[in-house]
Image 1: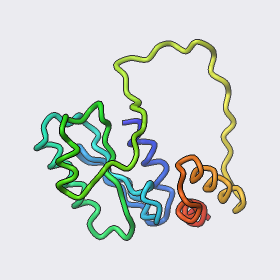
Image 2 (image 1 turned 90 degrees about the vertical axis):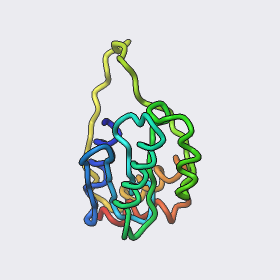
Image 3 (image 1 turned 60 degrees about the vertical axis):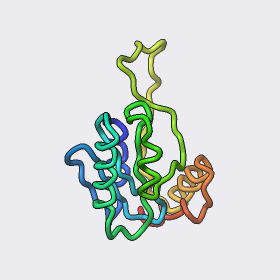
Length: 153
């Protein structure tokens, strides 16, 4: 649920955002040219290939009419074996693999957490810099990541 909530916070700031958090699939579309901001995410473990295919069908249904590319995110640790063939049958393929961020329990921190200073961005140049850094982190062309800054201004 943490990933879903993070994407919700990130995408709902954009003027054309579409959110649907009902059921087993979270849809968080910022409706930006950068597909990374247009995501469907299975929010519960998928136990059978049939369930996985139903999740993909719902994903396609919610993305219908979307003006830009989108992706269906899964957590490998929570998805049934053989999902790759089912996804491929619907024309989907893996685009990136991220480290799983789930655990049955968390260890206590080894040291006190540092204090963080969060500040709202208020200048166009700062938005552009954030978009550039984010794009570089994911090895994306700058023209793809620039929409992050342009649509937040």
